[in-house]
Amino acid sequence: MAKDLKATGFEIVEKPGIFPKMGYAKYKNHRVGIMLVPKIPYLSDKNKILFEISSLPKNQGGGIRTADTVAEIKIALEKVKMRIVEVSNVKDLIDNIAPYTTINLKPGTYNLAEIKEVRSKYVERFDAEENPNNPEYEYHIKNVTGLIIRGPKKGKAEILTKPDYGWVFSVKNSENVTFENLTLGHTTPGTCDGGVLQFNNSKVIRIKNCDLFGCGTVGLGINNVKDFRFDESIIRDCTDGILKMISSSDIRFFKSEFRDNKEFFGFNFAKSERITFDQCLISNNQTLYDDYFLFNDDANSNEQIVVKNSTITGNKGKFMVSGRMTFENTKISGNKFTAIQEP
Image (cartoon, rainbow, N blue to C red):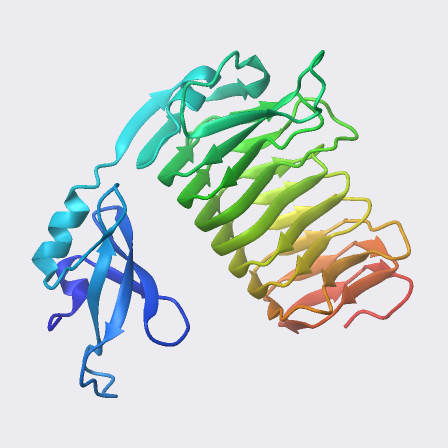
C-alpha cells in the first residue's frame, strides 16, 4: 500500500515479533485483526512503508479475505456495525451481551443474583458452589468480539454478585472486550472463594476507570491472555491477593492503584512476559505467610516485568520480590519486609 495509512483515517498497530507481523487496524471506532506481510522486495528505509495488509477477518463471520487497497479495507470495516444499547437493570445487561455491542449502563446496582435465566448465547452460567439445593451462579462471557460494558460518566454503576464462590464475571475465548466506568465486587464482605474479573484464552482486553473490590479473593485472574490494559483503575480489599497471571503477554497497568489487599500473596506471575506497571500506587497490602511474596515471579518463566514511575509504600510481609524484576524511577519506602531489604 503506497499511502500513509494514518492519512486515510487508519491507525495500524504492529505487534512485536518476526514476519509475518500481527496487529490490528482501527477505522471509525472499528477494529479488526490484520496480518502485515513484508513487501517483496522490501527496503530498510524508515521513510517508506515496508508492509502491506494482505488479509483481514471478514466482518463478523470470520474467515480471511484479501484486501489490496485502502478502499477495500474501508468497505470491510464499514460492514462491522457497532450496536449501542442503554440498560437500567441486570436482566437487560446480560441479555444484550453479544459481539460488536456497546452496553451503556445507567447509574444503579446490577446484582447478578437476580438473574432467573440467561437468553444470550454468549453467556453461560455455572453453579460455582456445585450445590443443587442452593445454587450460586457465576457468569461466563464467551466467544465475543467488540464488546464494551460501560458505566456512566456521572453517577455510579455497580455490578455485584451474591455467591461467595463465584467470579463476578469470567471472560473466555474473546477479543476486544472493554469494561469501563464500573464498580465490581461481591455483595457480602469478608471471606470469599471467588474473585472479581477473570479472563481466559482472550486478547485485546481493556479495563478503564474501574473499581474492583473484595471480597473477592483476587482482583484479577489472567490466563493465556494477550494485550491486556488496566488503566486508571483500582484493586482493593481483596482477601487472598491482588492478581494471578499465567501464560500471558503484553500486559500493562497504567495510573492504577492496588491497595489494602491481603492475605496470602500480592502479584503472582507464571510463564508470562512483557508486563509493565507505569505510574501506579501499590500500598498497604499484606502477605502474612512465610512463603508468599508481594511480587512473585515464577522462577521457571520468562518474565520481563518492569515497575516504573510508581510508588510502593506501606506494604507488609516477609518477602517483597521473588524472581526477575526491574524497578525504574520508583519510590519504595515505608514497607515492612522482614526477610530482605527493599531494592
